[in-house]
Length: 188
Image 1 (tube, rainbow, N blue to C red):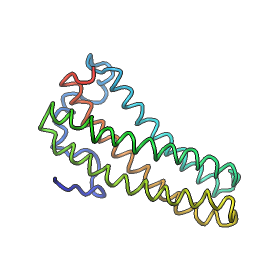
Image 2 (cartoon, one colour):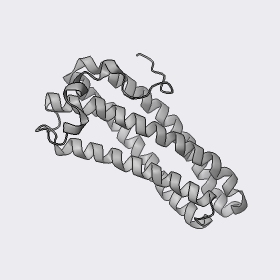
Image 3 (cartoon, rainbow, N blue to C red):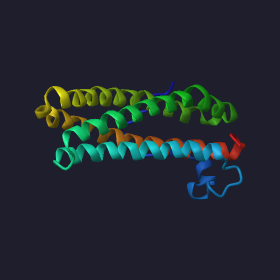
């Protein structure tokens, strides 16, 4: 497996944009092979972005004193759990089912799919950090509310890294996957 440095990558590598050049993002919705399954898959990505942004906004609002401790802990517990569980489930499905299907349809994209799987490993690490930090902040809401802000700061920073990573990863994933799906009439 080829190793990709996710910290240096800014967008889908040029050599992986073969079909994207022929099937650019602005034409996907109108393409006759753009099926409901693809729209739903991309809709899940939109929800991940929105939930990550909401969690980061809540952390910032709490640290600014605009969101009470108990409300913040409640929103963090619910939203953090949802984001972590749904991302793990989504990426597990992609790695086990969806990506092998794409690779079988177009072996030229094996390197791109390896790159996305490398991203998923890095994402697992970020989600583990978020889980550990989020659980600590939620526990402090009951055990030592005066310490919540101290623990919420690094968690907010983790959310900022996670959201930046997700923005790049999900865009790369869509830019690689959707043209394959359209070109090979998959998931229709």
